[in-house]
Image (tube, rainbow, N blue to C red; front, top):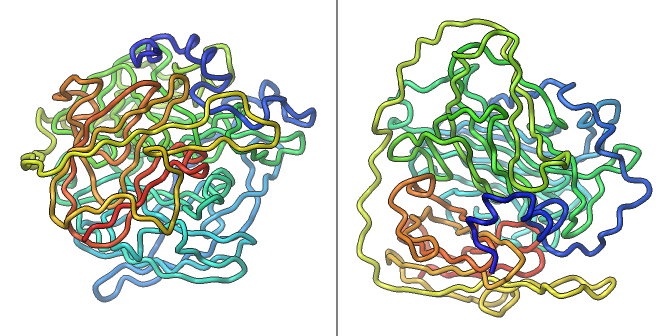
Amino acid sequence: MITRRTLLRTGVAASATLGTAGLLLPALTDVAQAADLDASTIPKFAQAMPVPQPLEPYSDDGDADVYKLTMKETTAEIVPGFRTAVRTYGDSFPGPLIQATSGRPVVIHQTNRLSVDTSVHLHGGHVPAKSDGAPMDLIAAGGGRRTYVYPNQQPHANLWFHDHAHHMESENVFRGLAGLYLLTDDVEDGLDLPDEEQDVPIALRDARFDSAGQLVYVMGDRLRNVVLANGKAWPYFEVATRRYRFRVFNTSNQRFFKLALSDGSAFQQIGSDGGLLPAPLTTTSVFLSPGERADVVVDFGHYPVGTTLVLKNTFGDQSAPTAQVLQFRVTRRERDDTEPLPDTLRTLPELPAATTTRDFRLSMDEGPATPGAMPMAYINGLVYDSDRIDTVIPYGSTEVWTVTNTNQRMPHNFHLHLVQFRVLERGGKPVTSGPECGLKDTVSLLPGESVKLQATFTGYRGEYLYHCHLIDHAAMGMMGTMKIV
């Protein structure tokens, strides 16, 4: 059995075992099309990385911030010299950024001008079921409309929103339907963290292009070989000699990232999916499966002006183009007036006693694919059925779930809608420190791996999903429905 330690320490071996892109499912086709764009011809670090700017509300009067977004197709320069057709929220690629405050609702009126149905899910959001973006709660193509209400009755967190229309979510997200949603509160605002120009969201993902610079979508594709940061292929970002806060989102369909600086320098991780960690964590890398987030502080103060550093993906084939992510350029000296990070960032609530335990087994077809056939993916041996309730949960109950990846070669992860959870154990060992000791909504599961999670199901009643957030796996059936009653 391939162990997590082996995979994390030997990315090259993991890539050889699991595919050229590292940690991907069996592709429906492994044969590169003759018309594919050669990733080696794309100039690296030739484009500046854009920084998403907050949207202005359509209205901020009364008791909520109101936005209007229209899903439509447009073009963007992702690879230098090409205009690529993309699907967007409000003509924005990468997707828009919404800033929200705990306790103040956000209302988004979504209009779908695309040629495909859509559904919008606020990933990590504690929201009513009718605003959760269920796979069958569709916004019709060609002008359908739907209003989503996000009460923001939860602590600060780096959330994001994306398409969740069943069987279309994978392609819709791949083609651009994703945006960022930064929720803050008094706890976060009370800390002297890098802010304004030094507070930078970074949405990472991979892609594949044809020779005309258009996105090539294939379900379960192992040939995606171009890394995008904020919608640009291998960009650079200019920094000053001071500390920066980078809020990193893995918005890939399938790619795992293990991010590290090219000189091996340490930095501090201060947060994960559900906001700040209890205390800063000094580390040299962060590991993100699709859907996971990391909040890190990097100090460029000890580098001379003129230094260049590469943010690397050390997971997978280190000779592949995808081993590089973006370049930092230290271009100027600036005084840093922010205080050192405190020893304590936040206090998490005490874990209540659990009343119920459950087991969930994730699996998918691993054998040779029949030509033209799609592999199937399962939770507890069942593919997703929108008419079936898989798990009934009493409102207010606290439960411990053991989630196991039963595959021997294929990785998965696990995303729970409605609530954040705590990771109690990984591989049978207690999680008492490190990046998984905070609040989470998505957790990685390498082949044969098992995690134990604890969550309290409160706030809203109704039907919600749990699923693998390797989005192609969810589209293949690795989803279940829970009903909070």
